[in-house]
Image 1 (cartoon, rainbow, N blue to C red):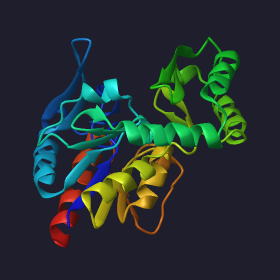
Image 2 (tube, rainbow, N blue to C red):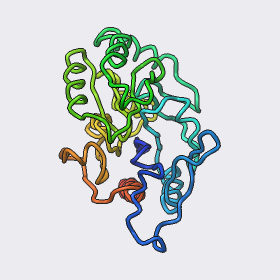
Image 3 (spheres, rainbow, N blue to C red):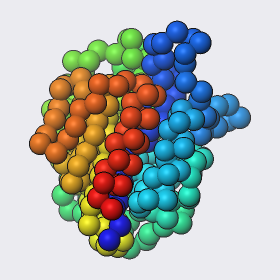
Image 4 (cartoon, rainbow, N blue to C red):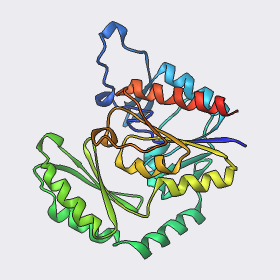
Length: 270
């Protein structure tokens, strides 16, 4: 039976230039591979060592990129190794099969959201009304499933984020602050539900996961084993659980360490 590896991407396996955390002397910095270009500019990276580890992992397990990114944002990433058959996008709102969204899964998700939480339009209206133009740079809706703001983090009043979280909680939504983005996501929209569906389809008897943010917590808890890096929302709150290992590495070297842990575990279970 195959092992399934469901991993978050941004700030878990791939990193923007601002998130690399290259604290070593320049001459000792790892060689980097660009894995995403946006508007003709390099955007996301992993180490060359991590790229080889991911290639090896793709041969040894069912690797499932699992991201809050929209389908369009995900499809511009060019990961090394075998092309994943499955990918989870929009925080579980879409399961891609060979790059195409599975319509039955998406219909199930949208029905669940309509039944269990306040509509997206209400949340979007609140964000537009309540957010301060001084620190908001963009308002975005992702695949008609959730909303997020792009903000100037140094100007952001973090008490406002806490107040938003309380407001959202009462409407069946959750809030996550990741770098320069504030996400408002319906609680029933989860990476874990999509991971379980892919595990069912593939017959996986071992599930492994990694992630750095509050939106990854349900994914980590649903897996047989999970890892989180030494940065991000989960690390900042010292979040942990019995089957979760908190790694000390931060930045792009954490991505490399996570892939080593995945590969070691998959090979040990073979």
